[in-house]
Image 1 (cartoon, helix red, strand yellow):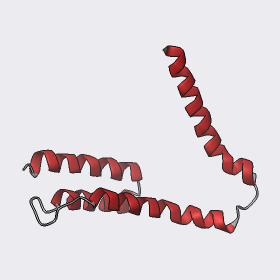
Image 2 (cartoon, helix red, strand yellow; image 1 turned 90 degrees about the vertical axis):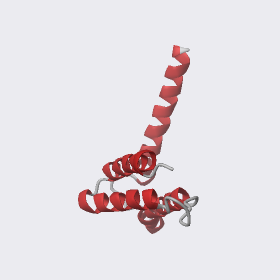
Image 3 (cartoon, helix red, strand yellow; image 1 turned 30 degrees about the vertical axis):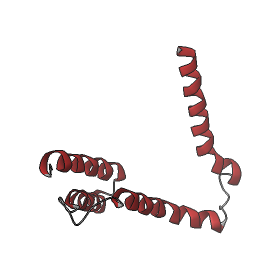
Length: 109
């Protein structure tokens, strides 16, 4: 059992390393990546975040209690924290905690 777990950890570490090393192996340290790669680097992250936001709010019922208020308030907190601190980890963590507190403690059905 322990050997299997160690093998899994080793494979995950190797894959993570290779994914992170791939751009350097492909383009070298001094070469400029192609314009397409630079473009994708600029647009993929915001597009992924936008898809996650849509996925998170797709089932919110704004016509019934609590009218989407927990999602709205937690989302506002995430945006404000990110604009203030520019720290995605802090923004996501605080927004998740705020949402859980609102759903389980404030807007209890």
